[in-house]
Length: 115
Image (tube, rainbow, N blue to C red):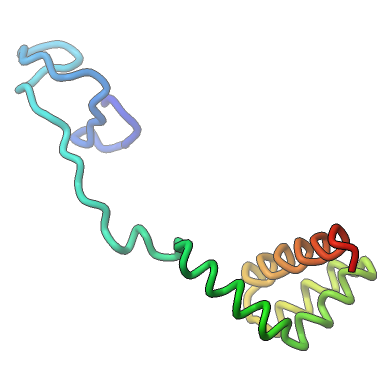
């Protein structure tokens, strides 16, 4: 078993096969196939175009009322309360953590800009 997979037939080619019957790299001389990346592997990756569109929309519309309240809680160093509040509004703790990180970065940017 060479490579990162636990399955014996999933060999990662570090050295080309020798063509010999025995040894570490035994077997027919073959080339490693590189399969085309499936669309499902790209899911969730943000393109530059979408990032620009999202930033323009955020600039025009501003923050939702729950986001403004959460930012106030974060500013008053009530992080746990803010996370619980966001979780109730968004639905999952994982999303709430992401939103918390986003809002804390926004607050830091505002401090740097001097608002």
